[in-house]
Structure formats: C-alpha cells, structure tokens
Length: 302
Image (cartoon, rainbow, N blue to C red; front, side, top):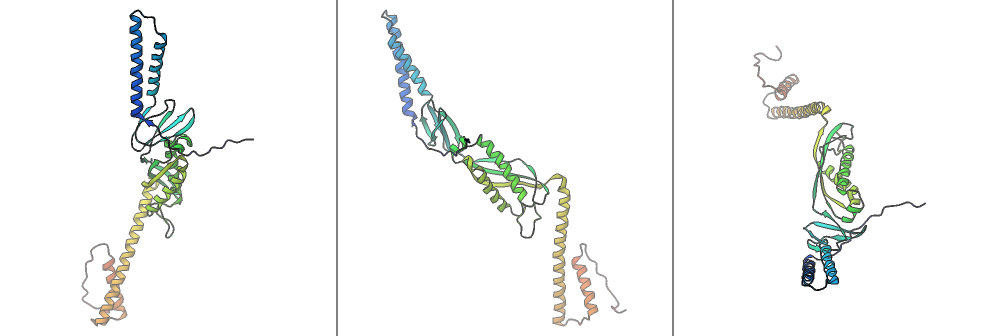
C-alpha cells in the first residue's frame, strides 16, 4: 500500500529576459502588425483583390504582440516572484527591475522584507497554574520562497498560528514571578524568555521558509480575576523585605553604638542599661512615625 509523503521544496533562483528589450520588440511587432493591416485595407479599398494571407498575418502579429505583453513584470528591492508553469515550479526571480518571462507562467509576488507580527493578548496558565495575560511581537521574514509557497497552505496565517502556539507554550514553561530559588521567571528573566521564544519559533517556522529575527514579550500581567490578590501579596512581600532591611540596619547601628561607647569608655553600662539602650534605639530606628523623646529624671533603679 502506497502512502503519499510531502517533500520539502527548495528555492531555485532563475533569470528572466530584459524587460526593456522585450518591450521594444513587442511595440515593434504591434506597430508592424497594425501597419500591415492598414495597408491591406487600403489596397482593398483601391480595388485590388482582398489579400487574405496578409490580413491573417497582420492579425497573427497583433495577437502575438498582445500575448507578449502578458510577460512583463517589475520587482522592487526585497521582493521576489515565484514562477509556475502548468503547476510546475520554474524558479524564483529576486533581481529588482523590469523583467519579461513566459506569459504562460503564473507569477506569484512575495515580499522578502522584515515584518512585524503584533500578537494579541492571550490568557494562559503559567508554570504554577496562575492565569496570566501575555502577548509578544515577532519580527520575521521569508528566506526560502519555495518553502513558503508550496510547503504550507498560507505562510502568513501559518506564522500567526504558530506564534500564538509558541507564546502559549513558553508561558506555561515559566512561572510568572515566584519560582524556585535561582529559577528564571517570565517577569525577571525577560531576555532569557525572549531568546527561548525566538528559538522555539524558528524551529516551528523553519518548514515554511521563514526566519525569525526577534521575538519579545510586549505584555505580561496577571489575569483580572487574581490581579488584586496578587497585588496585595506583592505589596506584603515588599513591606516584609523593607522591614528586614530596616531591622538589619538598626541592629548594625545599635551594635556599632555599643562598641563605640565601650571602646571610648564614654560610660560604663551594665547589662540592664545596655538592654534599655538597645530597646530605645531599636524603637527610634524601626518606628514608622516620628519618635518623641521622654526625659527620665530618675534612674533605672527607682
């Protein structure tokens, strides 16, 4: 039993005739046929027998010139034309300018310029299962015109669908911003995530003759239903981190103060006075509001 298997196509660069030269030939044939037809009609009007052969020849020349006109086309820089003759791939023209080819060739225009695909916002779950919104922009261009035309149904739609699929896969492979220790996340590892997205897109789009120049995330946020809860968590974590730094700094300053007092022998403090001093300094240094000192007229022991 035979099974049909698709084979990858490869671009074959072809050359065409100079358009300006064939334009001159076509115009010459058009004028020659017209002149022959007019002279035939004039001779017949003067009483000569109708020259059927010359009239038919003039018609053939006119039809030939009209047929040749169908072979002209122009190419701008970074454009190509894929030539197909009766379903058979003839080659690709990449040279910019004015060209002529067999008028029976089907000429498919394809742009070789870099293009931007600004993806829509997608709602997916990250590695931790949290719903997030994500979007990316992809810079791509056609490298192999034969693969782009013959190996996929619609290469532009193929790029769009595969880009969406790659973004979804990348989003599910990373946590949003709370991964394990030293783990890359979508929020903290933008550069690494962009490189991973570019590599995956290139693997997916290679069969369509497409090269991915760059892919970057343009939107990243928690889904609306959990955004407020995640915001409160981030605020709480920020407060805890700030408090840790404040306490660490306060303890360091208290330690330095006690060491300076002891080294310079400003006053001899017993353990109870040291504890009181530490308590007062920590209150002053860690308090969120302005501290108002209280003058103690007595001693610690009364």
